[in-house]
Amino acid sequence: MKNLVLGLISAVLLTTSLNISAHLNVVAESVFSAGEEPRDYLEGKNVYINVNAVEGCKDATGNKYDTTDLVVVMPNSLGALSDNFFMKSKSGEYDANAVMFTRARISNNWTKVDVVKGPVDPYYKDRKEGVRAIKWLGGNISPDQYDNLEFRAKLPNIKSASCVGKLRVELPTISYCKDGFVRAWIGTEGSSLFPADSDKLQLEEKYELYFNVTRDVENNPYPEHCERDAEGDVIPVEEVVRPSDADIDIYGVR
Image (cartoon, rainbow, N blue to C red; front, side, top):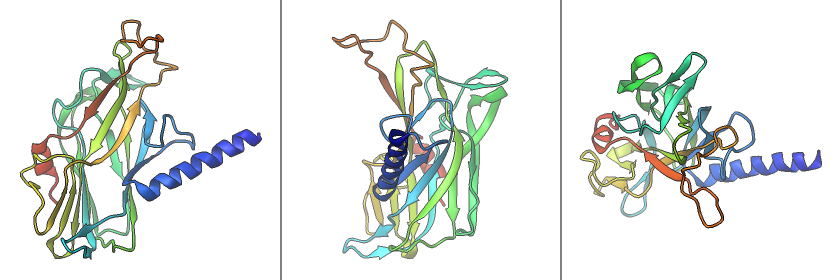
């Protein structure tokens, strides 16, 4: 019992530590992490994703500006997810998208929470429309404050015949601030809307928010044909899914 209590305390402390330093964390259905860090979650789960808005915009001299709007672009571009994934439900198995059945938590800290839908690859019962972005609009986060912006989503399952062990799900996010300043956490230099650093744009082309979908190896073991190391352990394949640069330009506006 003592070891269980210590384990629970460790899990809570690890999650708290991540909240301080990271910009995104996923709240599990229990206090136990399913992977190596609290941002690793098992395939097929319903998860609650917190965008931890702790940094706004700043100018070349270091002056900081309040965040008034924040946009998260979903990685549901057409053809973005490979054929190594599917969706499982009580009614059967279907094709999948990276995040499905997405719902934003209501918040009185913002004038409007806008869930933007658009075309996605067909999934559950041939649905062809899904969430492409969530926009928190008309708020105010000062440099001395932060907010947790939460949404719920269902994650895809990994096909048993594949050798995929982890899917990195990237969520480009744009902070719009007072006086026209913008900070784009989008992990790319290819966006036309956010092309490069300028007087009022801070481009984070090497970082975007993300979490990982991990294989449930206990219930979905690797097949025999997967590549293995000298000790016979599987070398898992890792995939990445993210919105296209064109979709960042379309759905990244506030």
